[in-house]
Every structure is written in C-alpha cells, then in structure tokens.
Image (cartoon, rainbow, N blue to C red; front, side, top):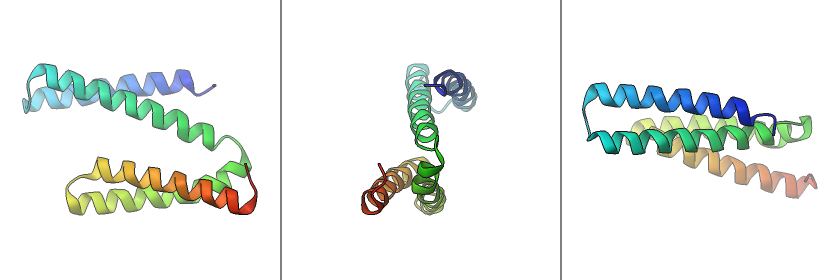
Length: 110
C-alpha cells in the first residue's frame, strides 16, 4: 500500500485541525473533542486509502471515478440542506462505491 504513509500524515493533520477548531469553540468536553478528533482522523484515513487504492488503475478510475465525484457532490449538497454534510457525503461515497461495483459486475470488470 503506497498510499498508507500519505494517508496517515494527512489524517493526523486533519485530526489536529479538527481538535483545535473544536477546542477553541468550547462546544463539548475535552474528552469528547479528543474522541471525535480521533474518529475523524481514522475515518478519513480509511476513506483516503480506500479511494486511492480503488483509483490506482485506469480501468478502476473509469469504474469508480465518475460515481465517486457525483456521490460526493450530491451528498454534500443534500447534506447542506439537511444540516448533516459529513454524514450525507459519507452516504454518497458508500452509494458511489456500490454503483461502481455494480457497474464493474455488469461490464465484467473486477
């Protein structure tokens, strides 16, 4: 996995930024902010590695690329209206991965 190191660095950076922003706003106890920051970093790292592993070859870029772009965009737009952009974006990514997989099965791509 060549994306592992980069995913760890970016996830750590994102987790620290998330912690600092939430800590400065004082919206929750410190322990809750730490737990949420760790969860954000872990989820982002997993999604980063999954996404870039899937998009490693040209064949998979075609299979998953367009559904991922559409899923992220629609998820973010719908999430903004529902005031849950992160959750809806994650749902959009999950649906995009399912659509890409089904497209691959129909076309005979692994």
